[in-house]
Image 1 (cartoon, rainbow, N blue to C red):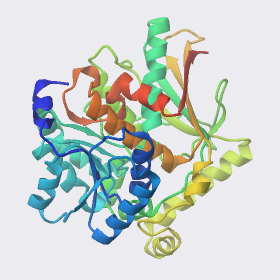
Image 2: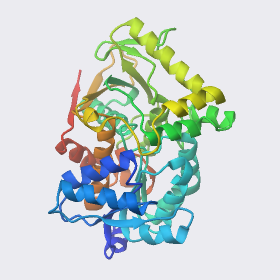
Image 3: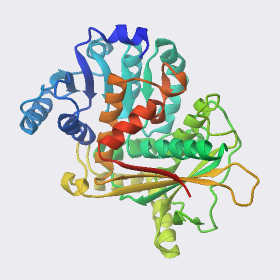
Image 4: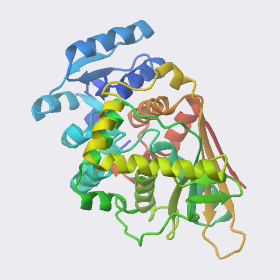
Length: 416
C-alpha cells in the first residue's frame, strides 16, 4: 500500500461503508460480512431509509451479537456534501445502489474524498461515462474504482486472467482467444437488476449500439469480430462440450474483460496483442441450445418496446426483492474457461480454469464484494503497478484470488 493511501486512511471512522445496504444484494452482502469478515471490523450500513437500516441492524446483531455491530448512516444522494461526509469517513465503499439513478454521484464522491470503491454496475453506458470522466482523476488521486465485481463479471475476469497466466507460464505463449462457459448457472434477477435492465432499454438506440461493441470499455480499440459459432449459435469445444451463444451477460462481461486486457497489455501480465473473449452457456443438446438462444432474443426484444416492457415491469421483482435466499444458498454454480494459445500451430496449446461455488449468483456477488473490500482494506496490492483508476476485479490480483479460494470457492487451473 502506498504512503499516500496509508496516510489518508489512518484516522477514518469506518473500514467499510456498505451503501445501499437494505436492497436485496446489499442485505446478502451485509450478512456475508457478519459471517466471514473479522469480528473487529469497523463498518457502516447506509441508505435512504432509517427504519429499514434499523431493521437490518437488528437482523445482523441476531446473526452474531458478539462482533462489532455496524453503525447506521442515513444518506441523501442529492446532497453531495452530506454524502461526502459519510464517504470521507470510510476507507472502502461497497456501492450496491440503483446505479442508473445515483451510481455516478457515489463514484465521484469516492474520488473526491479519497475512498476506494467497488460496484456491480452492469450498465455499459454508465461505465463508459465513469471511465471517460473519472479514470484519470482516480489514477491521479490513487483511488481504485473496481467495477462489475460480482457474479457478472467477477469470475469471468478472474478465470480469463488465471487461464492466460497458466498458458504463458507453461508454454511462454500469449492467448489468442478465451472461451468462457457457464457450465452450471441459473440466471435470476433481483429487483435492482430488473430496474437496471428496464432503464437500459430506454437509452437512445445509438448509445445501445455503441454499448454492444466488444472494445467499448477498452482504451485500445480493435476491429469487431463475430462470436465463433454455427449459424444456429452453437459451438463444440473438446474440453467444454456443446456451447450455446445465449449468455445474457456476455456483452457486459466481454466489455469488462477486454478492458482488463487493454490495461494489462503493457505489463508482464498482458494476455497478448490478438486476444479476444467469447462467452457461452453449456447445453445438453443442440435443441436445448437453440431454445436458449430464442429465449434470449425474445427477452431482448421485449425490453425494447413499451407494451412488453410494461408487462416485464409487472413480472419482475421490485427493488429490494429477489429470489428465495435459501433456495439460492443451495444452488451450485460452476464456470469454466479455456485459453487458446496465439500460435500458427495446428494443435494450439490450451489452458483450463474453473470456478465453482455451492451457492447461487447473488451469494457469489456478496462473496466477491466483501472479499474485494477486504483485499483493498488489508492488502491493496493492485496488479500492473496501478495505484488507482477505473479498474476490474483482476486488479485485486493474487490476494483476491486467494481470499475467494479461502472463502469456499473451488478454483482449478491446469493445462489440457
